[in-house]
Amino acid sequence: MQNRSILNKFWRKSIKFNWIFGLIMIIVLGIPRFIIILKSNITGNYYYIFLIFLTMWFLPYIFLSKKGRQFIGITRVKKKMWILYSFLMGIGICAIVYFIGVLLYDGTIHNWFVYISKYQTAPGGINSSQRFTYFIIGGIMSMTFSPIGEELFYRGFVHGSFQVNVGDNKASYLDSLAFAVTHLAHFGIVYSCGTWEILIIPAFLWIFLMFITSRIFYICKKKTGSILGAIISHAGFNVTMMYFIFYHIL
Image (cartoon, rainbow, N blue to C red):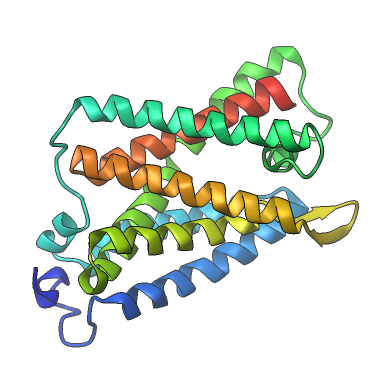
């Protein structure tokens, strides 16, 4: 597809849809997101991150033409059974990530899901009667804002911008790397006992696991022929993470 036809008419004279534009968008949205998450790890207030996710939702509709949106995967699903497989693959990779964390670090702060679980409850914790309610609320939120926003952005918008220059498969490695590094704000640079600390080895493991997870989402996109496959797989990962947090960690 010609670069010119990917963008909508308003942007065609001022912007080129290529890896440079993709990199700029990673920086423009990635740095504020990184800062917001780090601050949220102190305050426990994650509301502002939803504004970043909403921006990611609308980005393809702001910059891309209908053909451009189709180019990045906003199309009908071609293999419907792969919607189910995508969800199951999301569950599976999350279970692997969870058990690796438990095997290596048990219930310590070096375990990524243990650290992420710090702000999933109200002050004072939760009791057994509240657990299901918190799980449902957390599950619904984790299956919507983040999967839709991040997949439209990383597996869609960013991937497409790199794909123009380096092709489909190499673009996936690049968008997966961007996705993984961004999640360093969620774990790796940790705030504990009033101080910041970089957990070097756990951080590298976390980035590697997020890179592999991102590649799984890409496979689901390819198999379904639609960005929806990646979104569904991401949703499966997130709701499974919520299950482990509320029923096995907290």
